[in-house]
Every structure is written in C-alpha cells, then in structure tokens.
Image (cartoon, rainbow, N blue to C red):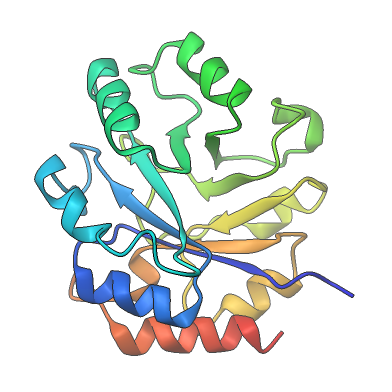
Length: 210
C-alpha cells in the first residue's frame, strides 16, 4: 500500500493559518526568515506561531533561510529547535560546513532549484530522507508560484517534495505525473498575497483523495 502523500505549507505568518494546518493534518509547516521573501517573519513571531507545538499531531516545523547571515541561522536553530532547516543548495551566504553539519544531524531539508533534467546522481546527500525540488528564479529562494517542467525530474527516484506553481487545481496532476512523495506549497494557497483557508482546505482534500 502506498504511504500517504506528504503536504508542506510554507510561509505561514498567522496563528489562524497554523491552527488550520494543524487541524487538517498537514505534515510540515514552514516559517520563512529570508530577507528576500514577502513571507518573512521576525523572531518575535515564532513563539506565538508555535505556541501549540506540543499538541498531538502538530506538524513538523521547518525554518527556511535564504541569504540569511550564518549567525542568525545558528541562533534561531539553537533557540527554537525546528525539526528541519530548509536551505537553498546554491545559497552563497551559507557555508558548506553548515550544510554538512545539519545533514549529519538529520535536520537538513535542501531545496534544489531545477533548471534542466536531473537524476539521482545530481542531488548528493545520499542518506537524506527527504528533499525539495523547486523552480528556479534568479535572486529568489522559492515561493514564486512559477512551475518548472516536471519531466525534468522524471528520473529522480529519491524521496522529494515537488514545489513550484502547485495549487489545488493541478496538485493531482503533479503527484500522478512525477515520483514525488508530496508537495510543498506557498503562493498556491494564497489570495492577494495572504494564505487563503479555502485554498488550503481544497489542496489538502485533493491530495488526501489520491
């Protein structure tokens, strides 16, 4: 029997959205600290967003960084102990040792921005349980709402979340046409730049129906 597809909702900025994701059984929730993102949150917001973290079946917490200073990444990781750290694999702000350190601790959730056909050997990190394959946009760390050609990852057999332009309307196609074990969505569940409860519910329903 195929395991249930995984769902990650990224760029959460409100407790209402967090509570909804929790109630719907979303697997991962992403908090974005990138200064390049319109979904960036400050450290002051973390405790409020994660106030119910000890509740039963609370989603795994992912901190996303892109072009953040190393000391900020280390501080927030040590202070709030997320389950995973999402880093963009070609982020020049992040030293290689930090990627390796998080990898060894099973905390690394790397995001590869896809520009051409790839296979397993192009990805590295052979012991990783999960990674993200996302669309490429110059100067952006993800969340652009732009889709990349899914045939580019048809030969990838490792566990990955598919990202980039996925929404409640195309998520079924995305999961049936790729080997993805789940999806990572930010803009696809937003209306006018804000998380839309109806879109989140529809997305989750469509994934769980598969």
